[in-house]
Image (cartoon, rainbow, N blue to C red; front, side, top):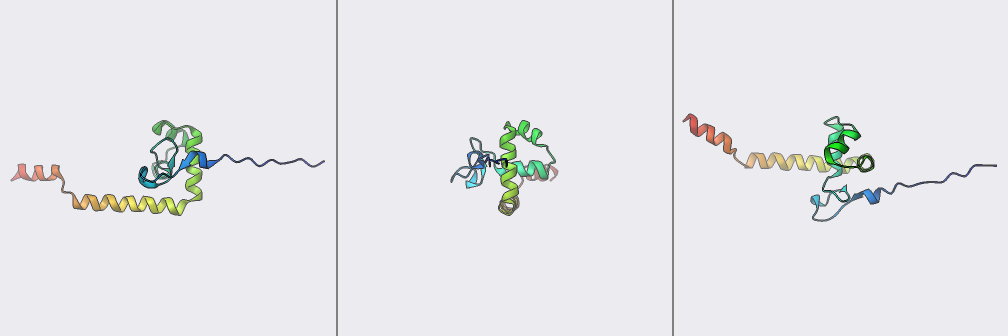
Length: 109
């Protein structure tokens, strides 16, 4: 007698949402403003474990793993989003004078 195998879906759609006007319309954890890219960067660039990410962002482990799973399935999209944010921040930094730097320069003069 052959065993039947049931396929179970964790339903990532219930964990990960995209809402226009919220978090730039980027994939985020439902019920939070925490983007998938934030969780991915905490894991890959900061070296945090899923438990540490859950503690840091006040998420459940299920939410963290869902975000990581979404990231691994949509890596190119998420990396493009991260790069766009990096370029935007660099442009803002170039276009915004440092008030502290100006104050220090004024004090030295």
